[in-house]
Length: 435
Ligand SMILES: *Cc1c(COP(=O)(O)O)cnc(C)c1O
Image: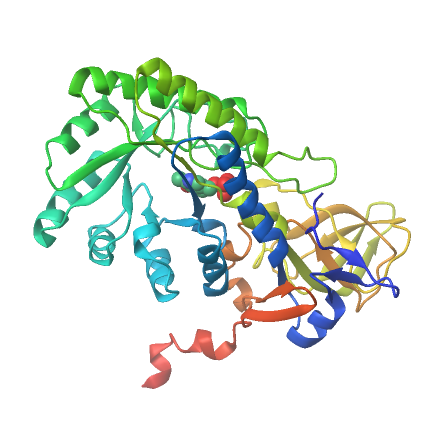
């Protein structure tokens, strides 16, 4: 199912999400508009939490990867759902702190954290830093000494696992900018260095193999590598991991033909592997950390656009241009992501095949090639599902586009959680205007 779980059509054929007709939202908040269905977000959170309860007897945590989409409204909701948060920049960290997200439940990732970012993380009292490289250890040594504080760390290893996903979304193969390589001794040296720094408390090992991963086997392999590494470290240094985290990356369906990855199945196979591997290693059951981003918010989001110009190139293609595009969703242009679409203001047989084009000045600014829709007309509303992850966070002001408004819908109520960007927001940075 590529649409949010509350999606329906009313008697007039209008698309309804969270009990609210989409045309009403478009009229009130304008387009492009991003709609998030609260019930779907909460259901995805519950699916992870409940699967862990079902399949894993040890401690566990679900850490939401904020880079998939953050807003204050979403963070408050995820806090209620008792998720943890992973941030990858000082910006995301400050945003989370401003939203009142508990710092102790924040984990900091990234392959080039700056000294200032680490200082900020330490001062905020965040839960843990996932260390990526030796340079970062140099910085951590300095900032913890300066602040006279201790810090929990996990070591991110590169497990050498191929996640079978797009090259830009693969992170766990040997040739990657992320994590300490095990094979060349880097990861082992990192553990040795951390153990020699009294301010750093080594909590365990982390790997993240990539994103939009459909197969479960690579996650199992990642856990296997983490434990193999854990056993080596136990033999060499006498340290036992308190936490094992195979990261995030579970895929979501974008088009109806995509398989429907099963959160429960992922958690079951990973939990089983962790239990067996801990048993074989003679380790107490570690805390199991999971880090979903896309699979929490992706299925909950729908992008809504208004149709403008329609251009027929006889025998070749019909371009239906909408009032958004790559400035709010660069995924099709960046990695050939596929989507499907529907009309939101009326229903009917999907007997037209059209290309939904963005309005920005790049030929690659196409949202959907060969979408099947009822014959579109100017003024119609086009809705694109599975737009909840990695669209808005990658949104730009290309062509000085204003970033879209975001509404959260639930049981017939809509709540604006991010207003549309205004020209004043952009002009505010122009220092020359003040002179
Ligand atoms: C991106 C990322 C995630 C989340 O990946 P999804 O595919 O959105 O689930 C988790 N952990 C780390 C370290 C990441 O970089």
